[in-house]
Image (cartoon, rainbow, N blue to C red; front, side, top):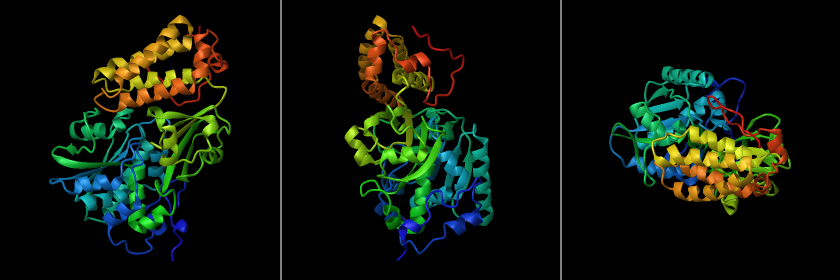
Length: 424
């Protein structure tokens, strides 16, 4: 019997340069014949690694029964500023991602694969371009693979915005009243999965569902790539088994072992208190705290940081990154950022701003053309709860030490004409 734990994982053979197709086929040599890709995918229990956690087999089933010229889109945009996992994967094992994309295309009957990498990351673009060229020389059959390079923006990585860009050269999210919803390029039904999900499909197609389920938990199987940022020696990208205690992940990453709080799921996610970091890193365990693994981002905030000031910086940037195609994004998100700034500055204006924040979150939630404003509302509500002590200090006119020191721990790209906060 093959030892499933000994089989290659997502970063097998990884060095400081991407594996060539020849090396890829040597490292990821199949150990036997997989009877049915669709059956193995279904048995694996794989859920998408892009953030939503949607079962991959349900997406495939939905697209299999559609007619027309179908597409598979590999989302390697990595719009989260704190995320580096797709860049790392495409820079080390791009052929594993392309394996999975070809298998998905085979299962749904797609004739073209579109691989999307932000043009702002020319190194990764070059790695993927070379990998596609290697495959084209080796195999003239199967779906065609095209590389696309949209501009980098937070919303550009949202799947409907990405399909909109491929279809009409505009990175605008599409209104989707419910899911599942079939996205289309022209009239062609389109399956979108992020790079990590495709790589896992590649592993399942080579080694089967049993191998995949040998890691992780019964409800959330497999391994996951995690970007660890914030109070760490340097940003880390780790592959970990789902169900690993979060404290172990932080220790491996060289993070602060006793943080104030940990942000999970990126800037549309929520905070886990520092005294709960022994929680297993899996959806079923995190659900008890109204959290999920999400996009595999762990941002560590130390005890000396000002949580409310960090929250303001994130929300201000998220407001700037919105598509501005509906009221909640165009007006609601900047208003949330302004209210958080008032809280940071404290005093009577801050007290009034806290009440407004609660009201505005209720008005904004569920009313956007996409899920972007809902993610910001989730982050704001979580920040108010997690940093209640800091907020109380600011409102009393005695900002916390972290605010006075203006320390920064969360990765937030600079805004044009950005000005420093005025600390009163």
